[in-house]
Image (cartoon, rainbow, N blue to C red):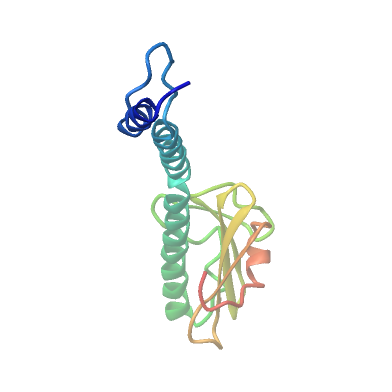
Length: 163
């Protein structure tokens, strides 16, 4: 049986982190917590860098729609309507235009609807993710939208004030 001094010595060694002779030291929780935090940080950084291109894709798609909008507005100013701002007539550097029922196949390819009083365009920023822009001669500001069907015809349904 241990006397009081031996019990107090053992207690002090335990508090000081000194192990009794012949006993293996247990791992402390600090290492486990630190390891879990490092793993979580690594996973978070991986997710951030894996999704980083989404912002670039969205920004590029919006920019391309704005370039096409400027070209369509030039046609409106020149002719009084959007009828001559169709896929066959529009020319914008680095952009390709397809008809209103043909889908956009990705950034750089815009599906365009051009009527006398309305103009609409759609661009696919990701598979299954499309941005719309809709102009109307009776409305001062453009209408925006998003959807999964990526055609100029579908872009006519855009009614939002922002993307």
